[in-house]
Amino acid sequence: MSFKEKGILVVLSGPSGVGKGTVCRALRKRGTSLRYSISATTRRPREGEINGVHYFFKTREEFREMVRQEAFLEWAEYVGNCYGTPIDYVRQTLDKGEDVILEIEVQGALQVKKRFPEGLFIFLAPPSLQELKKRITERGTETAPLIENRMTVAKSEIELMKHYDYVVENDEVELACDRIEAIVLAEHCKVERLIEKYRKFSGVEEK
Ligand code: 5GP
Image (cartoon, rainbow, N blue to C red):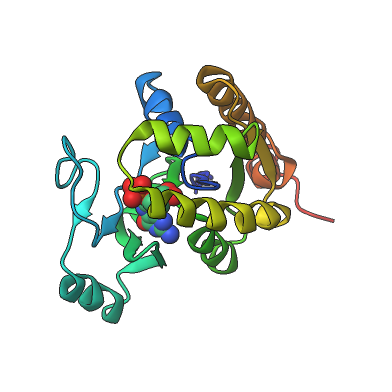
């Protein structure tokens, strides 16, 4: 039987407004081999967002039903809305040997870490909290109280960095993408991922 390497589950997380979405879109544009998991959410679509492309938009009841059916790898409530990662897509893609990237907030990332410790956890950090506030404000999608709410959440989220494998500062989107690609490549070269393949290939058994 030939050895088939499983894909890597890459979890890209960090405070809201840090630019996870922008970095993910830039990675997508580069045509990397990463597959993007589309989340379900109870949030209303923003202008230009398409169901099944940006999110699967669900009612609270539909979302609850998916939770009941254990359809999520993780889910979390964030600033009044629910967000979740459908598990089937993730499983099937990893089994095909393809890498999957999740762009999720930190509570969800910590749940994934419990269920899937072999994942690759990358914390996307803002250059500073002032910069983070500027980005959320400039995005123009949130009202002032919501911005303050997101900033309070962001400050507590920085402390959660310690649970991750890598920190990537999002000073410039293209640089952040370079670092993420380098991390994923290095992960593919880890001995524990590859040793079985070489043992099979050389006929050497573990001593
Ligand atoms: P937004 O409403 O700005 O699209 O997303 C708000 C936050 O929810 C962002 O930090 C985003 O990364 C996160 N998010 C998106 N999808 C998921 C998901 O499936 N699970 C979790 N836990 N967070 C998600």
